[in-house]
Length: 236
Figure 1 (spheres, rainbow, N blue to C red):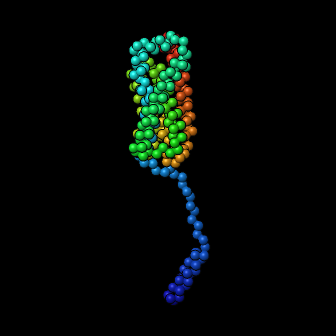
Figure 2 (cartoon, rainbow, N blue to C red; figure 1 turned 90 degrees about the vertical axis):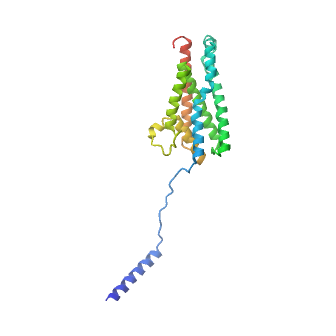
Figure 3 (cartoon, rainbow, N blue to C red; figure 1 turned 120 degrees about the horizontal axis):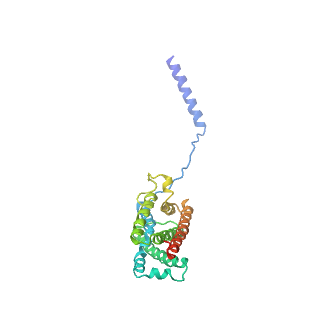
């Protein structure tokens, strides 16, 4: 009886094995999108280029202080130059000086540390727009406070906070900072756009980085010219 049962069991197993072998077994495969790894040298080389460009106004602090000391700023106030011309006479040198400084640092870091910037034209566009926006922000602070010490203190505090939220000191991939706070930092958008351009050649944050830069440039420029106009008329 035991032998008969064993034979029946073996026959059933063989039949099941034959049935399974005769059927095609399909295992569903799904490709999950992911961002390729980026090494720390490339990440922080990019992040610090974005972060440090926000201190571009410091390049002009000595000139601004000298003009104020020698009363040149007061001569500007009684001149026939328009507020726009006065504003651009400070903004353009700051932008050009910052571009030269960041450009040299970027080229040297790319050569010495083999930092990849991805699609070069996109990287240049984002860096230049970031410098224009940061320069406009710095000039706005100068025009509002008209005091170099207060300007520098305010600049360092605000830019440090933007960098802390934007991934300048720790990678945004592993940051515990809430997304709604990170998205409020222009440094986050620029850093993420440049990092993803470096490792993937594309980024959803390129558009938002450009929009942020344009909004900051326009709004800060308007505020700076209004503040300078009020001061020129003796109302500030």
